[in-house]
Length: 224
Image (tube, rainbow, N blue to C red; front, top):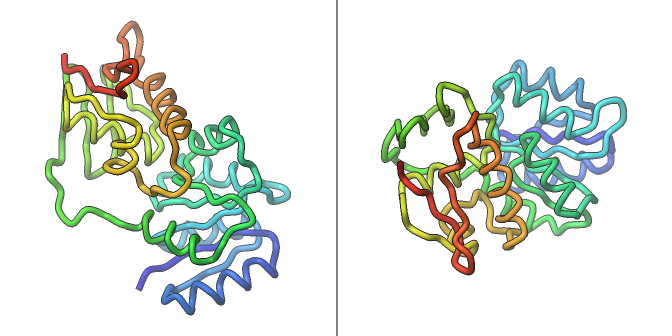
C-alpha cells in the first residue's frame, strides 16, 4: 500500500485530505509545518508528497528545495493558488514534479497522485550517453563534461526520452503524451518552460545544449 505525506499548515485541510486519501486506499501521514515534515522524511520513505506552497516560517517551496538537496527523490505534488507560468517555473525548478491549482476536485488530486507514482516496469538501459553527456536512468543523475546537472524530475524525464530518440523531432503534444509525469494541466506553455530550463542547464562552459528547437515542429536531441 502506497504511503503519502500531506504537508499543510491548515489543519482542517490536512484532516480532509487525509480522510479522503485513506478512503482511496493510501497510508497517510500529516505534517502541519515544514519542520514537522522534515522530521517525517528523515525517518520514513514516502511514495508521494503533497505540499502546500503557502506556509509560514518556511514555505512549501523552500521545504521542497531543501529535501531535494538532501537527496529525497519522492515525487512532489504542489498545491498552490499561484497559476502564472513564471511561478510554476520557479516551483518546478526547486523540485516540484506537478501542480494542482486551488480550488481542485478531489478526484483530480487522486489522478495526479497515481500519475506521479507510476514507474516503468522494466529499465531499458541504466546508462545513456552522447558526447560528454552521461545519464544514469536508475539514479536519475546526469553529468556533462564531468559536471552534475541539477535537474527536476520532469526535466530528467524529458532529457532521457529525447536522448533515447536522438535526431527525431517531437511536438509539445507528443512530449506530453510520451515523456510527462502527469498529463493534467500540461500545455505548450508548460512544455516550453521545462524545455527552456533544461536547455539552459545543458549549457556547460562553452558547450551548447544538444536539445534544439525546430521551428513549427517541436524539439530534438542532436547527437554529437
